[in-house]
Image 1 (tube, one colour):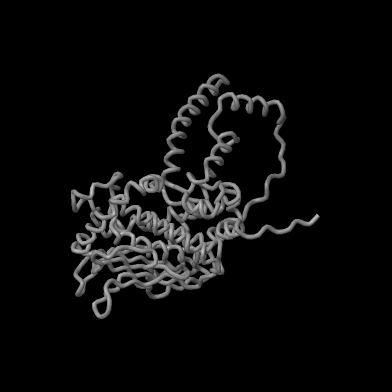
Image 2: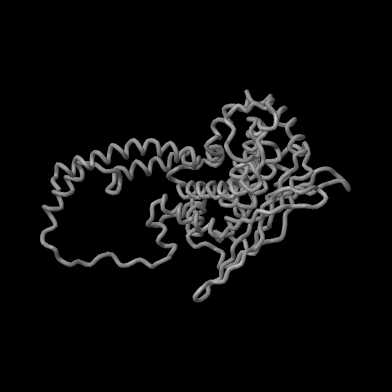
Length: 409
């Protein structure tokens, strides 16, 4: 192939990648949220495009070919880089963040199992879903594995959703005041937490990476739950709701924004304040998470029930992810959400979290009270359950919030 043909092909590839890259950047920003807040991944992408592994540059390709011809000379053996240790967390620093995200998502998702079910009893029969942690112990030739219960979620009744429509309708009065928040929270909640914590794409790049990972994991679990429970959106029950934004094309419960927001709030709080001493920080994070959840009800695309389910799920997932990262939790409290009987109860963040801890919640009072959110049987997390790659990222992110060490001359 001639130099001219190489140049032409490379320039053609560059043009195609340029168009795709513009679209890809927008897609990544929308899907990952946290990247839009800091521009960290945008900066990394710009550097990658200029580097040797970036997009094709026809003139650079030709220049590299001729430069090599001029300096390498005849072939001769030379010592290369020492081989890497396989399956080692130490290798994580060598991979691009985009590759690490794939590895880490598999570390989390591969240990989660789902089992759609049906819940009966005096409250009525409704679809349910159970989530399990897959505990794996090394073995030869096949490891031993067992699913351990972690989360159960039961759909509210039709009567509950219909009762909640009035609450959704009333929240519409706040739309003019909350419109800018609602629109800016569409890609995800991270920008609003970054403003509290002064997250920076360079100084706290591993915190950004951990946050993106958490959001993606939360979305994975929430979507599986939405599919299993198949809850209609408010505007599908009443033409008076008329949401101020497009209604998402998937089920309502749990609220994905509530799941992600409460997961991020709890995860960031634990990362930055592991001793749980900074009550004002936790209060601010949780207040922001609750506001993000409520904004989705204001917008007309969710019920308060969705916020209850999403918030309690997000808090459980935050503990689970921290435990899998080796952050000092040897057990994670399970979760049981049963929306049957919730009625027109509105959501408040204090219903599910207070004083650094998850809370149970019951609708009604006295002998008529019905358990909606229960803190269930503890899930043990042993040494075999800790993900070494995830632990690597957690430790790097945690170090970003520690006081810098004094340098010695």
